[in-house]
Length: 476
Image 1: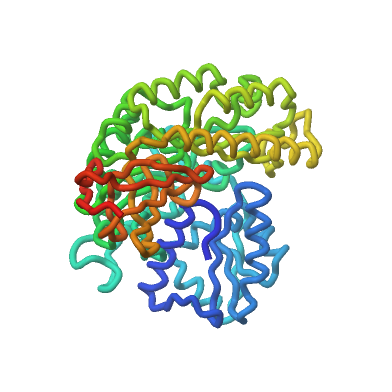
Image 2: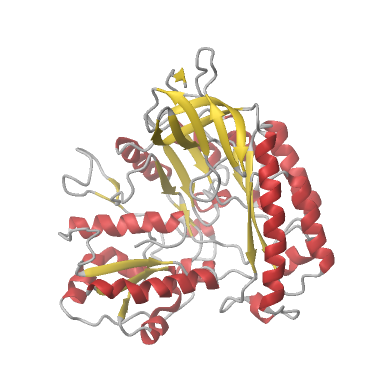
């Protein structure tokens, strides 16, 4: 069971590959011997969801094992609080099959003591690739038995759990930023990039499994390559990934506004096969609040960045997340955020209420707000966000969009996503046409909207192909 973000999905698929290679059988049967729950430990709501899942996972009689961020972050503390659950950390992943063998045999595994994983690697990024610093989930490359690996050559240690045409591809792990509200660097560790050749090998393997869109994930994609001696490496890797046979579209996520550079904007807006999609982590628009968050920027700088993106590609998609109720946030700060959202024309907006996180600087800041006031601010901003996303979608009526078909609904109706729509977190596009199959990339005209979702039709003239690899189809 996988909770949380797309990075966790990759980690689960590594665990699945290791287990299957060692003779374990993966099953959806409620009578499984062991239930492995890949938890999320990011914010309070996600932690509670993980705990609820752990408590219910053993209803079929199987032993319950917690892995993932919550397990890594709390280790022995979690094991003590939930004695019916076995807790394993990231460093157990490399030998996960032996761990589950022991659990299945009745052994009580000793959970790790929580610690700051940033201490496992050198402070200087240049020294990290050669240093031993614990297991990095989703980074392993290995030869696997027939039925898991391709006929020849090594590939990422991964077994797909979702047969869809979109798959996350982890390009790095960890984070070197010190945002005052975030505990992720402490339990995920320092930033480490995966080697370009490993990314290309895994991308080729995913394409052979029917994947048509690569969703590049990390804690901070704009830092990719800094520990490999080339901070512009992502700009070089994107065209290579987009050129992998079978891959129609590459999408980048988790971009830090303060680290955006002209070359990366150009690569993301001009490279064939790369979606002009900017997942920018603004978090707020008030410069005063952002400094308290230990982040950079303000509404003026963010608007200037958006202008540069849209000058390069007017139809580019932009999404961002925002925290409200941060300690010390005033009504003036909130009004500045309101104004920025109204001006920014974002395609997707996530609004989150601040919550104290263990071990973070923000938890001890003055100006903490009561929960009901934070909830009020979230409700207010979320309502505005829904209106603004619907307006932005309406702006796209008449626009040509490239849609990756992910589901056939019958009678000439299909569901997919345009270039500005990432999986799970953004809206979708309903397409009317004939003769499409799942995995096709088609160019269609936006004819209407339903909130943030689009309705689109293939032009009644000869069907215009998408940016690359599209099939010629008949209109509905």
